[in-house]
Amino acid sequence: MLLREAELNDAVLETLIALSKEWEAEQSCHGYRANARADIEGNRIFLAEADGAVIGYLFGKRCKSERQSSIMPDATPYFEVEELYVVPSRRSRGVGAALFAYAEQAVKPECDYILLSTATKNWRAIFHFYLDELDMQFWSARLYKRI
Image (tube, rainbow, N blue to C red):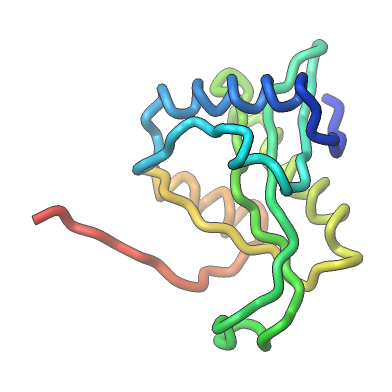
């Protein structure tokens, strides 16, 4: 498996949009919709590749904290993971963890934290992944109930 940071070009954009369409079709996340160019532009993009194909991606951007003082002072630089996706046939094989670790090392010189949100329907698996495998800390939860 090859991990790399990629510049946004037409080929990378086409690949990310195609993968996000597959993710949308899975219906594994509440409200997830496939990406358009505007969703991807301005983000740092990290790819996992095998056999000449992208098998996973992570993208996000550097931000400065505001009103998050329960975990960090205002103006603290952090990296907000917008999306982390691995194709279904490669899940549970360390691809997501490798992508996350690669991105973490890449942004570490300029960011003090990594943050992310998730809307997965399989919250037990995703919490296991982020909390147990990646050693992230639980900060908050937003729950809903349709009435």
